[in-house]
Length: 492
View 1 (tube, helix red, strand yellow):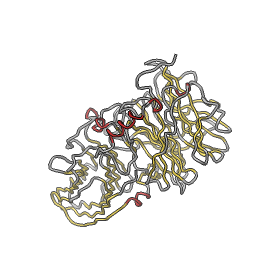
View 2: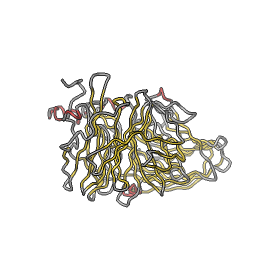
View 3: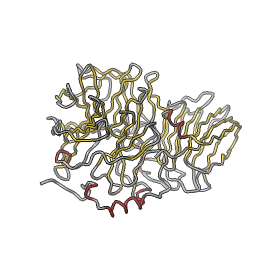
View 4: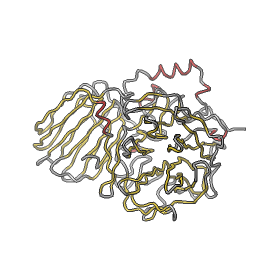
């Protein structure tokens, strides 16, 4: 008999009245973003199956309809012609089959034979504490119809030597063959990757573990959400290791994202690591996924949320959102990340100004849905920066310290505090030269900050008071500034 908890319900089991009530509870919340993807109701987490296919961008994400806990995961579906204006489609994957009895977990997409192959993990709960996993396939045809493959599960269970924590297939094609990377946990509760190979994307053979050379093989107890991309002649592997210890100011979230740059040798199952780092330095950033865009650029989205924490929007029956799409490049063996250029399609009126500041300068602003591009020239200032979502009651602080060569994002002065047990600030080293370039994407309850054309990025959720919309520049010396600010329109 199938193990079942109350949270193991699909949307097919809901009454029309129940769905109407869920929507009514959440629809008018002012914290809902207007251009970041979020759920109408329920809980969103990992982005899945990202692809540009048949003239549209397709985006799927993990979704539990019935509350803000991690229950029975479905694949929600959205599509867009231009990457920024999205329409919600019918739910793509509902876990109704025995091979996915406890959720259609995360996965990726690849075009094969003019169809979009959607690979995902069928989650199997044996009881409250034990689990297994199946690797499954659904196919979208050129008319947008999605059918689960009749041969599911393509990979049943987990290989010997691993726990039931095997998930999140990333499939790519190389030298005429298809390869699958899976996040896995060994029986000794250390994280790793395992790999499979297929001639057609359906029949898979186990290859073994992928070894990361010149890298700590015992980093954390589980490696989730593996992602692989080839950029500028380099191989990029991104993943989400769980159980990583704090390293100074790095890896301070409950779960974090790491990248390694180097060369993947599929014959030897070795990734020769040349450089590695934490992918992002903000509070709310996890479960990244890349894909190739319309112009073959490498794009990325992530889940702007973490774990089983309570967020202020829980009372309205919805939780979490995705980041805005980012373009990923590699420069000097480091990841550079900037908002996708399609952001410009959302711009409305523009305001620009230049001036000097010593002390505080208030920029009056009446909305928290904007793009801000600012250049600060600190001159002899040591402590300087900008405050966001400012009112008499609160502010979010972005502070630069020229002496220490650091940048800090501090949300301790915000009224609505959450996840405080992991700290209220995030800090990174930054070479502060003659000027600092800052791009801010503010969208009601999420902010994304990019420093010096994507050298550093910080993502944070925030839940400001209704009147907390102003922007403030501060400096302990005479500092020059100039900025452009665009009001942004709805994208979803």
